[in-house]
Amino acid sequence: MRWITTGTIAIAALAAAAWTATAQEFPRGRYETRGITMTLGRDGRATFTSARGTLVSGSYRVDGATIVFRDDGGLVACPGQDGRYEWSYAADTLRFRLVDDPCEGRRGALALPWARLPGALVLTSATVIDGTGAPPRPGTTIVIQDGVIAAVHPDGAAPLPEDATARDLRGHWVLPGLIDAHVHVATNPSAQDRREVTERRLRNALRGGVVAVRDMGGDARALADLARAAAAGDIEAPTIVYSAIIAGPEFFRDPRVRASSAGLTPGTAPWARAVTDTSDLRQVIAEARGAGARGVKLYADLDSAAIRRVAAEARRQGLRVWAHLALMPARPSDVVAGGVHVASHSVLLAWEKSAELPGYERRADVDFATTEDHPAVQRVLASMRANDVLFEPTLFVYRAASARDTAVARQREALAFAMTRAAHRAGVRIVAGTDGLGSDRDGALPNLHEELRLLVEGAGLSPMDALVAATRNAAEAAGIEATHGTIAPGKAADLLVLSADPTADIRNTREIALVLRRGRVVER
Image 1 (cartoon, rainbow, N blue to C red):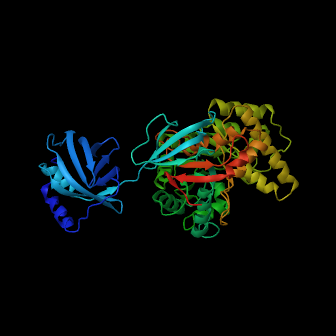
Image 2 (image 1 turned 180 degrees about the vertical axis):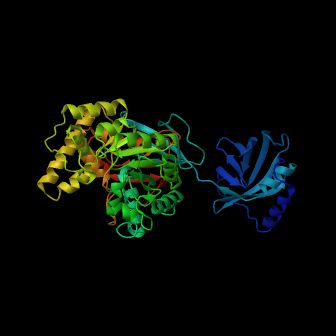
Image 3 (image 1 turned 120 degrees about the vertical axis):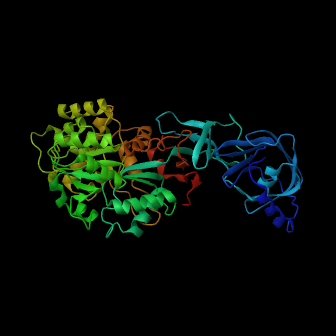
């Protein structure tokens, strides 16, 4: 080995005086030093790799406190020159003391301390519900390495990785972590969404099985900081994807959008922008991207032409297009035909049958007599299916209002169920979102579990369909389907482990045994 210079040999001399032979079992596994990874396998093979590729491959033999290396290939190997060392392991660090080695580079490399890398976590004997809608697979092994799913296979179909920690999940169900595709965690960071309260809500969500959220309108300054802190592990929280609101000028009288853009003139914030026929949409969308938004949310006071222009530019710049199902004056058919990816709020579908639409402030005043088989409703649903527009009904928010026991709220909830039932029957893909993440009370479950129950018991989805709505479909809605939403090699190891079968009873999503975030167990 000629890949580390002799200057590092001095480190071995410093350690020699305090060296103590060990009788412990040799700690095989993966180690790292100065950008080089050393793998010492159970089969007696040793490899040293870096960004350049395989530096050395060969074998090793352990005899008590002594180890002998022999190279047989690689970019900088020393074939035919065996190296003998004493080894010591403590505090997750493997050290070698030179006994005899003619290979100068190997002497230099092994003089350095080698830090142990986390071993693979292997979940065995699990019943896997992979998020695609496929039947559950009992007797399945999931291999997790460096926070990512490395393999999924039947138990015993492949040898376990070196240095793996196995966890027997017999009698448990493993799902992709749930995704709430409609939350608001930073509408007013100066008041009800102040940081300490929001962090508690996010922590409860993660501990309750929600591994990602799509924020549908808030202060991007706060959202960017929360998203960064969640990604860095500074706070206990799901992955956060957020939107930039785009609407007509009339919307920006709303006190909520004023709170989320405090300090700026309403309608001028990059994440809360008023647009007209003369707006430079290329600049508007570029600034939304600059604020960290992964999608634009079309909210209100937009006509069909404006929807098409905004959606086309957002797609051109790589952003998702999210919208309310009616934008007043634009009706549901205009929204669906305009190029959106996801349409929200099932009740708004009823506006399609109205001859004229009022201003957005009256968007909830729909005709409760609208039936799910009305021809206008069915035409919109057929268009949604043809254009693969995802339907996000937000049943939870209608149930929460109905719980206040007013006749109008109960009618609105019944209409929400009917429209969702019609969409599902028409083959439109459903997305689970709550419009309200959950309480900051210690130990509170996120509202998404109730959304799943309502999708099944109120809107007629099967438990499996509801699970897909909160996993694969929600990941697509948020634009994170490359990393989340299904259990497959290469996906993030953000998983939910249940002690009861959710396909038998959707309420079993609350029977949480474990939550994994980046392959690590979240303490509950």
